Length: 298
Image 1: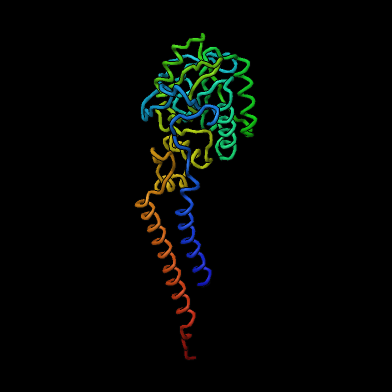
Image 2: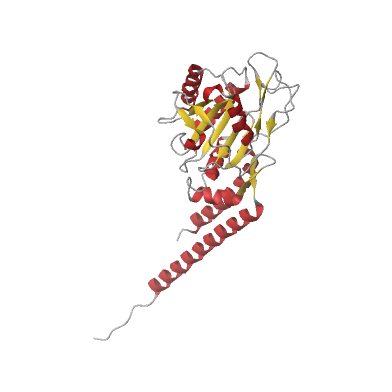
């Protein structure tokens, strides 16, 4: 029995636990939903008259699924068509003529989606809803093409929606049901709004919001896994979600110390059990091989 190798394996197991603990704050940090401040100086977020702009988190609520949209091909889509019970749905609120924040958000989101092992349109759906009720269909189609190229995944899909019949009231009805508030500014063709990704379960319940224009790929992936209600992921995700939980204040995954200690203790017991079982087996083999041979008289 190779005791040095066993000792080294146990050491690696311990070090892995330490690394997971120390790296958790870095790996699973996501942007905060900060107060609106500074349109030009803060990536497109309005500095003045910010009242009426922001997000009221309506977790577990269901958006108005009957609002009708047109997709990038001009096809009528009711939002319930996306929430058909098969895949979780990611939603962003943007518009084509946004001067800065929309393109930055969607580029960063596309890049983060390109880094995970889940493909939009396959394991989950993603829809970008235009905040401009007069959105140009050509711009909507071009936007879809551009950001799908940034994702860089074969067979990926990304739905771009604009409200049907240029009906701003219906658009407001939907955004209000999501807890999302925006308004037109005095600038021509500019809308004051906050960048956010909203995660919905396959049946349409709001599971999470992550605000800002940057996204940690691991946090993004685990948010999709959680929104899937167990339909995505496996043992690794189950163990991870036992040890980490999403803090709604920090908008990040943080270590759940009690569960982490339970999982770590269980792994340690399993490792020790395996170690002693190997020692017992080795001792039996050694004892048997060293027993004196039976003497026979002829």
